[in-house]
Length: 321
Image (cartoon, rainbow, N blue to C red; front, side, top):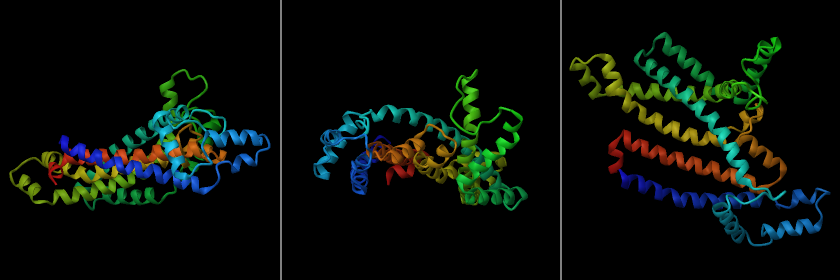
């Protein structure tokens, strides 16, 4: 198992290096980093010259990449183009906030999806199965921004109109909450629900399809033939193997969601990775944008690695391939 994990880890290193260069080259090629500053009357030519020298903007793109990579490794992505402020301090703050949102949403989605998927497979073609299928298709086809806005309108019209403070439609917390944990839950409830809806729809369909494939396999029929209780057959013999495809989907989806919270965090004004990206983009500063892209790319690669490791634990045959 150690050799398997080490091999997967070593595979990830060249992928990260190649990704970092592609990110830097793509963002640098979009526009001149000083173009936005030249349109601001507050920046003199002397200031622009200092920024140009500090960021090595007159060097070839390959040389600039190595300076940026050095800053990313040794100086935590260095500083912003505008204001020369440390990037990492803001990144760590927003990463923690986004992690709270995504972990809560994914845990909620996984628990609901496993129950719905397993029960739908065991009770195939039942009223529950048809109902779950219908809501899954609705969840997959509902635009995230529309659902977020409709939930905000619903909460404002039902709760806030009568001054009932159960759920909130913006920000991460109140200015001076009496109970910080409860207040954070009330603020994150709607964003968590918005993110979880599509995940529940996707995961439950995968879980149902996987369970249907497993419960019709030979070893499950053998377990039934031995006279084992149906609960034991489902949970002990079928459930573990049915989890393998779901693990793959969850790992890949979680990595992608780190960079996919832009819409939700913007609509709910959450101080997370998504809002950080939009703010940096609107400011015309490429260095926070590149840092954000690098963090989200590494997250996707990391969760691919975690997926491979968990896959190897659930299915030992994978380790020897």
